[in-house]
Length: 525
Image (cartoon, rainbow, N blue to C red; front, side, top):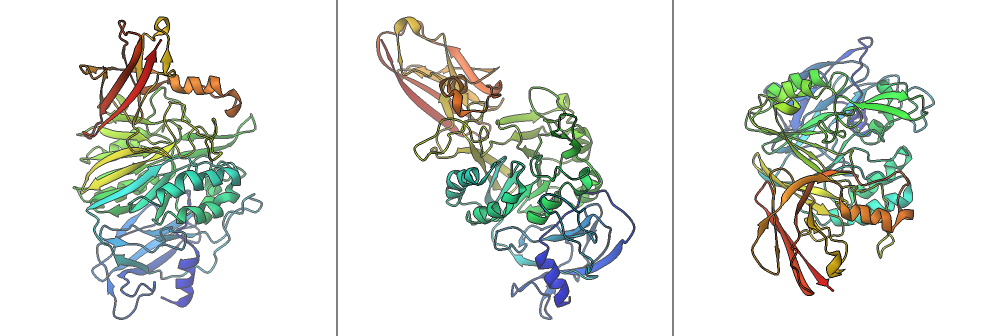
């Protein structure tokens, strides 16, 4: 590999192009995937090629031979990538961003994109080698996943620093994955975002969201150019232990609508399904597959094109023979768990666990401010802003919602707004908001250390969030309201409660067998 090739690989960090290709100017690229013993990024004479490694052009997938060699054709708009195998690591740059691919885009972006897009790359090398290094234990590891940091400006990017980065820097995690809407339309903030997130001291993988694209581009072909120039791939895969992570781009950009606003729909577009069809047979049967998207594959509450993935059934058909599939997304600024079955179009042997993860920005950085002058930004379902910590052991997993600035044990809230209640105004029911609750959760309550009584799951809006909207009307956008959720539990309140001090406890057991509880002391006058 020439020094020019090496420099090009390092300067163009894993850039991907949407899959609308031109066969003109296609070229054959060859190279080697090798074990980089001295970690200099160059294939040296004493280093070994690695066979059986997947290399892709975002449509086709080839496997390196026993000497680590590959040969593949790339076309304008495609990206060449190595798919990180289990037991190995790809290099990361100073901003903790994995360096595993780059783009073949000889003409660059159309002129005039507000945020710059991609520069032309005319001197594309004919040989590209991919360096890997040996990894440590990947059987047991943690990963952070969340959606929508979504800062509008530098002030809100400071909130991301103070609320999230400072907390994540103390996590024992192997990497994080951000599930879209990294920005809120202002793509000039990407540079500072990268510098800040690097201080969490773990590799950072990104998924593209509908607020991360070039709205002045003409359709999907170049709408990701600035994103890719700054953050990299719009779809890719990597393996860690007995888990294969697949990041997809399901934001189908439709241009500026008649209302003057960007228009999009949830769809896995372009050549991604063909790429998956070629990729999936090469994934070990014992692997858990984790699909990461910005827009949910399925969202509770209605089949709307901008909050569901329209062609999810095409994806499901490719995945249904796999033993275990987990899907994670962002976008909604609410937290949902679903276990999809035939009713939602999933025909796999086991249900597909789908998690719409918690947003770091909560309700778009709104709400009353705390002692640090940062909005508390509770989500519209009454859930604190935060992230999810996934713990993997082999292909098994559990996860926990971590509220930013909250103790880890805070997993449920008793949504009685008042701590002092008159006897004549006692509420008729207890409402418990189990932040990370699902249909597999169990919830109980008791009064004054009495007998535990089971509560019933309901679909309605959070009384606590309704209270916040009413109490602090100037701290939210004017169009916000409480959104019905499926992680509330209710029970009739005791009608014979006497005047005095009482303790009310709620405990819950989640889908993984983890138990959480909360106690609220109330006074009846």
